Image (cartoon, rainbow, N blue to C red; front, side):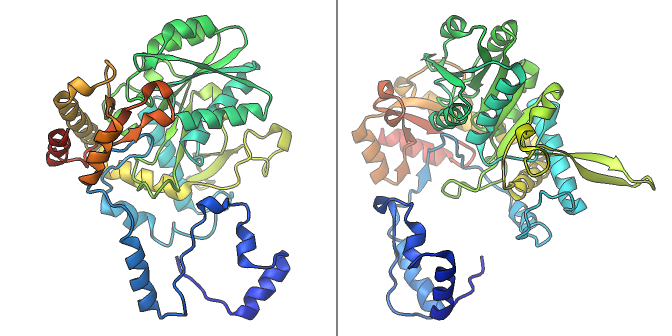
Length: 432
């Protein structure tokens, strides 16, 4: 991003207009313990600044290989994704959600929606949300609004941070979130049957779940629908849909997940892409915007915003959401990524993830915590000492699960994608 310098006089004028005394006052909301200041001293030339910053960068811990996933995944991104998404026609300061946006952006969103529906087995998808956590929370709100009931059941095998977000959304509406335990790494069907009742608006699971295992979506769908509740299925890494049967085919009513795996780098946490898709009868409850295809009076194909559920467009009390930004550029990257790979390429990515992760798991079976089918993540028992040894040898040893699950102290969530070579895996195994 370009930087336009300003003089002291301009800075003082701007601060006075805002009503603060200094630039530091703008960041008072950030706790001091996490603030980081880069002091490069006196004024330097551009070349000198770049040299100084590069010296600071070298102080960062840099792993030679990483086995960290847990909601953010290291996949190969074809170079054309950044090349096309970074063209000025798309990469603009103007937020592309107004009705007058260009036909090119509208067509790209329409194609994105179509691809997401084909991947998930759903009938309608929106034009993106902030991230996977918000997508899951919006799905919970759809379940509540559609059913008129007050409770959402969510599995503890769902990403812990996603569960926090869902609870925040429900608390703001005086609705209740009920968590159920997992058994051997999967949602406990027995606990679910005991917990579901006439107040249950919907059930939320992830498959593959946060611990890497595939859930029995069909069985859980049956339990939900016998109670007239909706089933939302989250997905840890959507590249798995290159091989696995879609959630829609297995009985899901809503699918919500993080779309970062589809052509976006990890970027230390964002910007990411919330994806939500639903059955057709839930279309008017879906947040965001839905692009449709039509023809003009001369018969020429065109695209338009068909449904807009924001308070900006309709009465606030009838709005399905209050999202005030748009992830169209990240959704465009996902569209280009999926189109570039094509059906067979997408399958091949999924195959590589399964082959690599199962090769590693087979080598380290004695460390495995849970039994069950998995895609590219699994839980291993690794002590603090083993993790430290791996880190000293340039290996990022996955996510320490103890911070989220006290019962899983000394356990790590290991992720293996197509970016982890046989040599990377063998080195990990050798060190263990």
